[in-house]
Structure formats: structure tokens, C-alpha cells
Image (tube, rainbow, N blue to C red):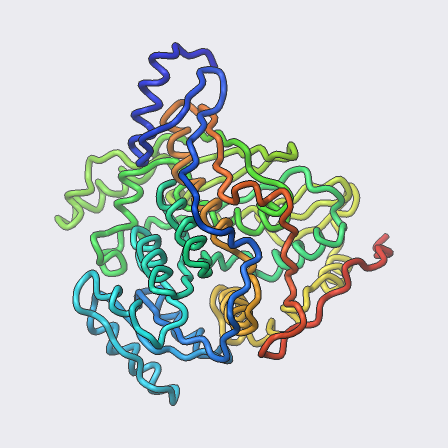
Length: 480
């Protein structure tokens, strides 16, 4: 891209300021490089903490996601809900009753204003602060919880700015507390099976992956009841562009590619369409309901954002995001390797070990062969408990069992920061005509030596844990 350097620097500075970045190095013919903050803590790569015989949870946010989470967590062994919080008192009282009706001790309730969640974090009987709040509170809640000596788990995205990403990393390193972004899609059944296949060499060398979050959510963004708190979802669509919600599709493919564990993202470029639907939808609603008048005649983010990432090992990742146009739900989940491929969307799950997709019988045999032990252990229970088909329960079960055994988590703070950083990075790139921008190395170089975390728990610990799957199986699938 040929750009006048002075003009480019002026544009770049404005773009970086818009996402909260005050200092950077820019190159007219290369990517923008963002400086790394000073780091004084100890790495939490592979962090093992003291085992907990029981995990006492303080749950913040009892809306759509939080209420379901409360029900789910009570089905996991070794969990006690000691405190709950929401800005709406009626939700707190309703959820207290849910816990009592399960024969559990009534949790303490916090609903005295916007900052009462801080009092929850200070409690001595809370080991893990689990946040299901609107996005802008994810980082503050996690940081504050860790500073009170608690582990933190937050709904996605873990952060919305690069400063927040670094704040999470630095706080986790300083406190030596876990901080997990609750990316549930990493625990969906096909994603876990393809992860196991990748780990055991079925796809050969992974060359390229594709992922997405394509989900028409206009109904939710403009829902007065579910958007009660300042219509925060709609505000993000009005005030930000780029890929605002990358992690559902990105998390699983990053694990498959061993990102942060042998490879890292190096730079990104991003492009968005204009808005074809949101503005028209807002205007139509405002015509019939004065409530929506403040959202009429406004500019909204484009419908489809496409971002491309190149890794240190020369591999590529395509990430898409569209939550405002008519199309079937899709996370893409495309894996291209030197020996095989997989695809989940659109249409049914598919695997190819040659030029053709496996037929239904062959696919069943292969996926059963590579079903990881965690699914064999809790998969059926997960389907009964629910939560996006069961993946939410597997995620919660895995998190709690790791904490009870003092084992590293599948998703650490570096993963949460990296996956979340795609939003501000893509926003800057879109604003600067798809100029490429460096992706920060949140691991501080530890990605070079860090080994992939096994998807099955290690032996040992306080609870009955899973047997480790054999590292390699004979690859005689006989599918022809």
C-alpha cells in the first residue's frame, strides 16, 4: 500500500486513539507495531494452583446467560454457590430461590447499585468469581477479583481494548491467579473430536483454518427487555466496527493450531462491508415506537467483517463476523491440513482424508474413534443438563475439575487476551483501509517452548480424574 507517511501517521494515530492506544510505531509499507507494556509478574503459562476440595463461586450477572449458568453450575460436583449479584434485585431474589429449591444453602445476594459486585469479590468464602455481565464489565470484574486473591472466569469477550487485554495478563501474572475466558465453543463435541484428531496427526500439518460467528441477532440487539441495561449490545454495533465477537469460532481453531503453544499470530488485516440492514431496521422500529428514536438515522457497523491472520509458522486463519443479516447460523470451523480436512458449517459435520468427504458410516466410525475421554466421561450428562447442546456443561465441569485438582486450565489468560484482541485490532485495520497491524505476543515469548495442553486431565489430584489418552494410535482407519 502506497501511503504518504505523514498522512498515514495522522490517520493511524486517530485510529489507535479510538481504541485507546496512545503510543505506537507505524511503518508506511509494513504493519503497525504496538509497544508492549512493562511486565513485572511471573508467567502463568501452565499455572498450577493449590487444589480446592470445593470450589466456592460468586456469580456476577443473572440475566440471560447468568441465570442459565447458575442452574448448570449446581449440576457440577464440588461446587457451592456462595454469593450472587445483579443490578436488578428481583433477579437476585429469584436466583436465591433457585438455589434453595435445589436443597442448597441460600447464597448471599448483592444488588445495591452498579458496583456492589466488588463487595462480592471481597468475600472470604469465594474462590472463583464467575462473570456473566455485559462486555464492558468483563475486564474490571476479572481484574478486581484477581486482586482480591480469587480466580476469575468471564464470559466472552474477556476484553474489548488492548489495554484491557494487557491488564488481564499483568494482573494474572502479578497475583498468580487463574483468569479464564469462558469460550464454550471449544467444548462442542465436533470441535473436541477434531482437536483430538489434530493432536494425533490425522490431518497432517495444519495449513489453514477458517472460523466465524455468523448469527442474525437483530432481534436481540433491538430487544427492549433483554437489552434493558442501556441497550449495550446495540451501542457496540453503533459505536464500533471490525470483528466485535471473534472468539466463538476462533478459540477452537487456535487450539487445533497450537496458537500460544508452538505458534503465534503475527499480524492481521481486516475489511468490513458497509451496513445494509441495521440502519434500516432501526429506522423502521423508530417509526412505530418512540423508544427507538435515539437509534434511528445513525451509522452502524458493516454487516460482514472478514479478517485474515498470518502466524509465525506461515499458516493462515480466516475470521468472519456478521450478526445483522439473514443467513443460517455458522461458526465455519474449517480445518485444512496436509493429510485431511474437516468442516462443520454450513451443513452437517464433514471430514475428508482424501479428495472426497467420508460417507455417513465412515464419518461415524472416525468421530467415535477420536472422541476424547472427557466426552466419554461427561458427554451424556452434558446433553441432559444442556447449555448449547451440552458444551457449556463440559466447559464448566472441566474448569471446576481443574481447580479441584490444582491443574492448568485449557484456556489461560494469554488465550483470552489474544482471542479478544482481534476486536480492537480489526477495528483499527478497518478504519485504516485494511492496513495490517501486528498482533501482540501476550505470552512474552513463552509460546516458543510451551507445549499443547492435553485435552484430557492428567492423573492425580483430589477428584476422580480422567485417564490420559494414548499419545498416538495406529492410523489404519480402513475407511476406503
